[in-house]
Image 1 (tube, rainbow over the protein chains, first blue to last red):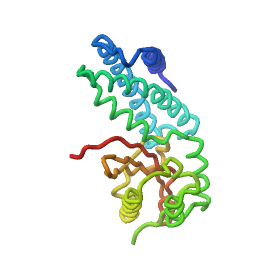
Image 2: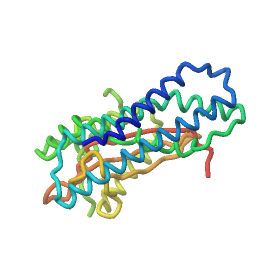
Image 3: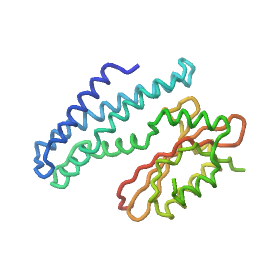
Length: 154
Length: 97
């Protein structure tokens, strides 16, 4: 299912992002910030491709062109997880650039994208179990769940 | 009449224990508003469960922090319940509008 171009983009993005971890955050210079811009562009482009494939997959399921499969959901989750795994060093370096008054093109879009992916539900196995349990009538009532949330012995 | 809400066993496991009561109050109120009108408030989601899944994103601003939540749910077949299988969470500093 995964397009070869997306896999290649993710690899490139990963390699670029891993290199950032070696940079000394206290010695940020304009050149680093320009490099970060390129990495952010690669990351956003990979994410856009992921979302496009995800949208096509969902549409095919909705229209009955193909059937939903948890295995394919898991593949998407893995891609999103890999993408998200690179965010911390990049966000730190963007912050460091901006703290030195170097603007980073795409920084705001990248922050929003990071939040959006962080808010996705990527634990597919747990979702699968949860939906099966709920469909079988094994759910936790609202009041009970809220009580547990307010009295955290979880 | 509102829909009933049921949670999956670990649906709330991503919600930090440290959330202030004021945020939890608004969190609870937001889910109750979802229960009153899930057909309109539930948005299409392409992931993780496009056949039946819906999502309800909302946020709560408190003490300089914006708390982001997304409740993912399905409808019970034939009943007036929504089944929340996951609530995701993130937060960032917030300086106000």
